[in-house]
Image (cartoon, rainbow, N blue to C red; front, side, top):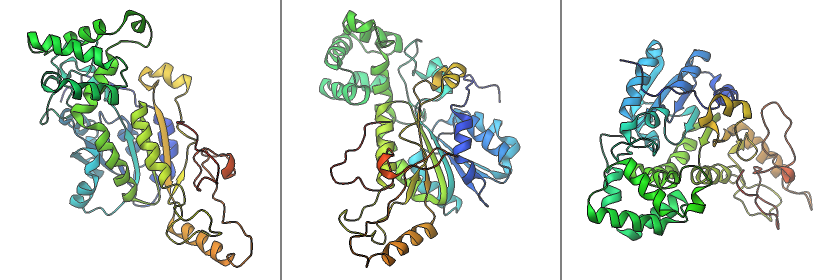
Length: 374
């Protein structure tokens, strides 16, 4: 196995290890790297936690081959699987593993895919219009661009790329494909650039980036997969287990935020003085909203510039029972409030009262509003 064509610096490596550390140190820890890529995060976990068993998932067969070579010295405690991350329940069933203790999602396109011109992800390099993360199956971006109805293309560019000039871009695509099939990334990028007004091209980077993002998401079904993958990961998380998710654009982060905050709040009637059994939060938020990278991190690794990190811990069953028992013991006290649940805190810092904490684990009080994206 030769050196991979894409060499990457793992994004927010030390912060991920800091957040996952307490879970990685649990006896018999099983850690899942949901987006294995070139194995940078996975290698660090295996080196620093010699008792951890790793399950590495990736839909990209080339990435798996490179990671298998990189992690060969840990072979006796590594399971590398060709799978998309929403297939976790199947993978755990086949391995006979009932639960996991730690998990990491590093979403978006991997360094390997970006650095390989022939994969078709980069608008700055000419290549066939492919964009499949798993090149063994599925429709390519070329098929999407040349066969989708104009209205469907407009929807994809607006919804997945947040491209406000989607109708103009699609009109240019339709005119071009009437002359001949669009097959290259360079030609598509040129069409997009020409379709966007000159004033709008002066800011915001390459004008093709939103169209390329939208096509990539459509080709790989990224958002639909993520919608089910995060709940599957949380369902599999053992008490005191931890999950870290890094996303790189607002559509992903919105899905992750909804999934995590839904389980970090009570689901019981808000006007009851106590928490009903089974209605309390099952997650503790470890970050205040989404954490951005530090300036030092971006300077070292420019691809970390847009990352948003969120982390949670599964509340131990004994803690849930203790809190509910205390609540019921106080239920007879007239006018007593339901027990307050403290909000998230950065590791090593004291927790703040729920009213002053973003995304706190309790339900919002009447009249309160949820703050926007972190």
